[in-house]
Each structure stands twice: as structure tokens, then as C-alpha cells.
Amino acid sequence: MARNLPKILLACAAALTLAACATAKPGPTPRPIPGPPPGPPPKLEQFSDLPGWNEEDHAQAFESFRATCGAARDAAMGEICRRARSQPLLPRAEARAFFEANFRPEALPGEGILTAYYAPEYEARAKPDAEFSAPVRPKPADLVASGQGGRDAQQRGPDGQLGPYPDRTAIEAAPPGQALAWMRPEELFFLQVQGSGVITYPDGTRAKVLFSATNGRPFAGIANPMRDKGLLAANNTSGEAIRQWLADHRGPEAQAIMRLNPRYVFFTLAPDDGRPPVGSAGIPLPAGRAIAVDPSRHATGELFWIDGVAPLLNGAFPTYRRLVTALDVGGAIKGEVRADLYLGQGQRAGAEAGRVRHTLRMHRLVPRVGPGS
Image (tube, rainbow, N blue to C red; front, side, top):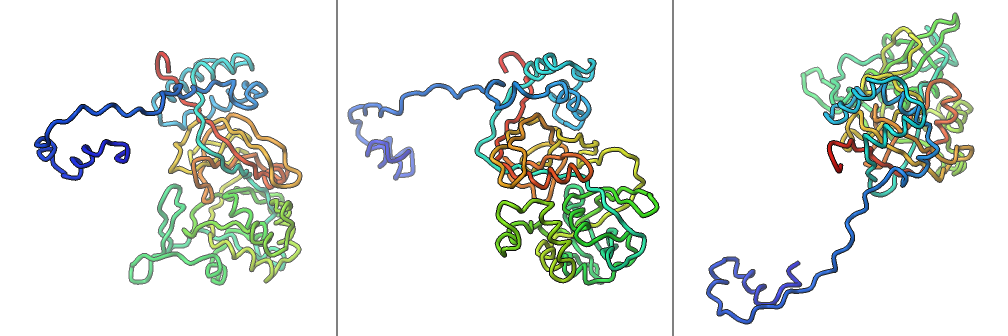
């Protein structure tokens, strides 16, 4: 700004006091410096601007919104939630009208990445053997959890002082103690990435494996290192391709790759009630309608339109365009335009989720809170 001022005004500014300028002899009134011509006001986005809005299943989106909108803490969203729950499920056209009457879309700047996750189902054993050799570990007594959902951690030493908790390599080298169950190593690794799942014992007994805490170390994906090492092709780093490679190289070779991710997740067991897993919002996750976001950028319960295009991996669906609600968080989900889409439970959901790596654009649906909003 200063470089556009007349020199006399620059001199006054340099004098640092108003008195210095007041003593200067008056000169001719400087002509106003022309600025850039005023441009049009920023365009208010319309729902018609959202790619895929006309093709959305608004009835399904409304059903999901009605079931999960109670997670929001925003007063305006709370009022819209009450409106939604005061009426029956709406057909497609009326559901679309509901969203358009109660929200306005607001584009988030730039592009990011869309990935996906799921609740896996794996086999397990009560005792270890050559194949099921990886212990499902409970939260250790010396781990002090902190942060949202206990995702940060420190270790309390014998002297009571807190310090960083050991990484994956050190944890796996320690005796497992009272393991909750035993799994194939690569499947336990994927269970830790997803955060929860279901295990089945040979007699048919099922149990939910629920997130308890982490060791507080940052998450590091292994897809790119495997690609860079030539272990997988650049367009074939899907979750299923990674899992298959780890299974085929089970032992020290696979273990070395998995230990590139220092983050370690501890679990607790619960009876399998058949319900979907619960995200950080404390609400069962609706398949295809819930996302994990960065909690430093977005509030729980916010409603978004996601536009995921240009997949990087073979076999992926070309687009993901839909209404979703922020109901979860994830250790690797960082940034404003970043989302992890929950796709459901089991092998089919896992195969789809492992192929999602799309360019992402996001619109926040802002509640209308008065005339002209």
C-alpha cells in the first residue's frame, strides 16, 4: 500500500508522529490515486453449480441426514435437524427441496484428496499359531491417552515422568501379555489402519474389535514406499494389492514394510451386535454418507457435498458425488479439502475402499439463518 502514496505522505509516515505532519506547510491537495475498477460481487453459489446435484439420490441423503444430524452442535443446524425429524421420510423431489430451502452451498478453496475406509471382517484365533501370529493388543497400563478420541499418547515411566510412547517396531518386539485375540499380521495391520472391525473365530463366534488408543506416533502410509521400491506398480497400490503382497511375503520381508508406519493402534473387544461401527461423533456410520475429516478444520456434524473425480488407481469408480456428513476423524486426514469416505462393512466394501484415491473438491452446506441468507 505505501508505495502508492504521494511522497509527502510517505515523509509524514516516516516521521512516525502526527505532529510532524501537522507542521508541514500545506501544499496543493493531492489528486486521488485511481484504484482498480470495482468488480462484480463474489458469485453466490447455487445448488445447480454442484456437479452431480441433479443426479443425487436426495431421498437417501435425507434419510441419512435425519439419522445423523443430532451430532451437530451448531444452533442453526440444530433447528434444521428438528425440522427434518418432525416429518416423515421424504421422496426424492421433496427431499431435494428441503436441502435447497434450508442450506446454501459454499465452495472450499482448492483441491484435495478423497480416500475411503471401511469396517473389515477377519478371521481370528484365541491362541497363536504359525499363520495367526499377530496379537491384538489392549491399551497398555503405561499409556496415557490424550487428544480427541485418545489418538495421542505418552508413556509414563517408572519415575512417573511422561515421554514419547514407543513406535511400532518396539511395541511388536515386546511380549504381547494378555492378547485379546490372534490374527494374520497383514490383516491386523489393515485393521489398525481402519480403526475398528469384526473378527470371527472358527466356531462362528463373532466380536467387534474397537479402537482403544494409539501410541501417538504419526501415521505413515506404505503405498508410496512400496511403489518407490518397485514392489507394486504405480497404478496398482490399492488396499487389496497391498494386502495381497504382504500376505505373499509374510514374515520378515512384510514386517519390514509394515514397520515403515510407526503408528500402532490398541483395541478392546465387544460383542457383535450387528450394528454399524460408531465414529468419533458417537453415532453409527451410514455407509456411503459419512466422512472422516480434520477436526482442526471442520466441526462434527457439518454437511458437505463432495466431488471426487480423476481416480489414480485401477478399477476405481470414476466419480464420488454425494451429500455426506462429518462424523469421524482419522490420523491421516489433514487439511481443509480432505475427506475419508466410509463405505460400509466387509470384503466388498473393502475392495471398493482400497481403490479410492480421487481428486477432491468440497462444498460446505451452510444453514440458512434468516431472510436473504
